[in-house]
Every structure is written in C-alpha cells, then in structure tokens.
Image (cartoon, helix red, strand yellow):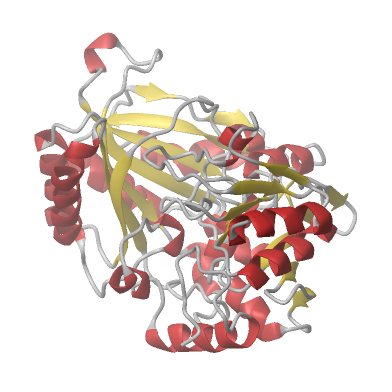
Length: 455
C-alpha cells in the first residue's frame, strides 16, 4: 500500500465526510475550478459535512506528508484549491449560516459562496461586502482581503471580520478574534490560507436594503475614460465603481453596430439613499451619451450578475496598485486593447479610497490601503500555445501602467513566483507574517497557496 493509499484508508476511519476517488462521479466536481487551464488529479477529494470533521482530515494528511490543498469556492487564479496526487479538502458542503439580525452579525461556514451568503442576509435587508462575483467562495476572498462593491462605503471584507474559527496543522480548533490569538487574527486578514483551515467566519452586517447600481456602458475614448475615473474619484464614499476597458461583447442590450467596438463597461454601486442617487451619479452620465444605462434601484444581491455555470475562462493577467492613471496610462490602455488579437482583453480600473483607506495600514496583513487605484490587465486565450505571447503582452502592458511603487493584491495573483508575491506585502508585513507562520504552521503543511514559508 502506498503512502497516499494508507492516508485515504485512515481518512475513511477518522473523517466520516464524503471521500471521492477518481472513479467517483463527484470527483470531477471537486477537481474543477472556476478558471480553466488546470488539469490536476488529486488522489482524493474529501468533503467534510461540518467543521467538526476538518481536524481529522488535517492531522491525517499532515502526518502522512501528503500534499494538502484546501478549496472553498475554487476561484484561485493559481489553481491552489487543487493538488496533483495529493488530497483536496473541499469545504463545499459546509454551508451553515447563523444570522443575528438584531445584533447585526453572522457566523458563516467557509463552503458558502459570496452570492449564497449575500442572498441569505439580504432577506433581512443586511449586507457584508465581498467582491464582485457571486460564485466566489467566502473563504478565499476573506483571507485575501476582499475588495468589492462596498469598499469605499464599508471597507474591505476583512474590515467586517469580527472573528474566525481556524483549524491549525496540529488539529487544534482556535477561536480567533481581537482578544484571542490576535497575531493570527491579524495574519488571516490578508495573509491567505497559510495558517490553517478557516472553517467559520464571524462577520459584521450593515443595513442596506437597496442600492442604485448596474452597468453604464460608454464609448471608450481618452476623454470618457479619464472623465469616468475623475467622477469616481470625486464621488462620495457611498459610490464604488469598476471600469472595464474592453472590446464590446455581443450583449443583447447593445446595438449590433457596437459589438466589437472599444467601450468602457462601467459597474456602479451607489449605496447611498436612493432619493439622492440621481444627483450623485449625474457626473458619470454627463461624461458622454451612454451606449447603455442599466443603473437603477435594485437590491444589493442583484449586483452579482448571473453567471454561466459551464464558463471556465483561460486567461493571463496582472494586478497592481498605482498612484495615478494619467493621460499616458489612458492612451496606453486604448492602444493596447485595440492592438491585441486576444479573443478577449481588458484593463480593469478601480478607484479606491474611502472607508478602506481609513484603516491603519498595519492593522491587518493587507497593507496597501493608501493606494488610490487598483489596475488589472488580462488577455484570454483558447490554446495553451498562445500563453507565451499573451503573457508578454500582459507584462509589457502592466509596465506601461505602473505609477509609483510596485505592489500587488494577493487575491488577484496567479502563479507568478515569489518576487510577485512579495509585492503583495511590504517587508515589515512579510516579516511579521513569517513569524505567525512559524508559530502556527512550522512544517508548512498549508503550502498550496501564495505561500509564506516559515523560514
């Protein structure tokens, strides 16, 4: 019997949750991620029914030396929720959610997606801000930081994290918050899954029954891109935006003659009173005559647009924080997008600030709170032979946009090497994370992530 076979045999006795082997139909679900291009074949996918079953899985796998991957929603750009030949601990069945509407808090198991959580708390007119995609697992986005539609109003996801339940490499179940294991609580707010399995999260809830939000699509010109960004920077904190500069896809609500044209696909979320939304959003609509204006009063869960379940995009990308998006940046964006022959290519621009910037930079492991913009560029591909050319385009494009000290958001990093990972953390933050890692995971059991080694 091989080591892996022995590990699986022990898991059957110590972890009563479902164990899926390669000949099991449910195995494929456990090794499929949101992003395409990954074909790793774990020896087994273990799907515990609840948090109590997780310590047995962790200690069994850690004791055998077998690689352990932890999967929440399967949205890792680096494919970290998978292992080739190891064990995948899939949290997908752990979806318990306990909402306290009066106390404005919720305990949520890490198998929930952002959409599932948002729908459930939204029934009470409440919200916790995650990202901008409903199928993202709350585990991955919370541990990375969480920059989404409410970043300027309420801060990042980690700013509403009150505590968590963490299973460490020795099987201990730690209740972590500002008073209990504060070093670990600091580290999980931006340091990723390096320190253990986050099985439950304790979140703050905010009252927000209605927002004014949706798509505002403009023709992309130097004037419109700069005008949209200027309006976003000048807007009150209630307004958070995402500007995607891209070639217009064949959306049914766009005139056919617009398909394939260069557009700014703006996503707007105005969380202020609906009565004043028209005035707050007028600067965006005044930039130019929109090609489509779908911004209207909606419930917050409607900000997560419908997704195609079988859509598994393959793309190369770069994420960065920048100090300015000036005229030169805008010209580079428009030129690069037009010149590329990728089936889809995009520059995504986010104006930050507001509540997320008012938290001290050393309060959490996410430490880039003062940067005014986050930019991401991506090129999609259909054949792996295209990857080198797409990668070079992305790297060159990103270098043209960089303004200020290089920095990256760990939640948007792919498998880009340690130098790129170091850009997610200033040196004092990195050194502090190494110390926490050494204390809670000295043998680096949790290494299938953007790894912060203990030495």
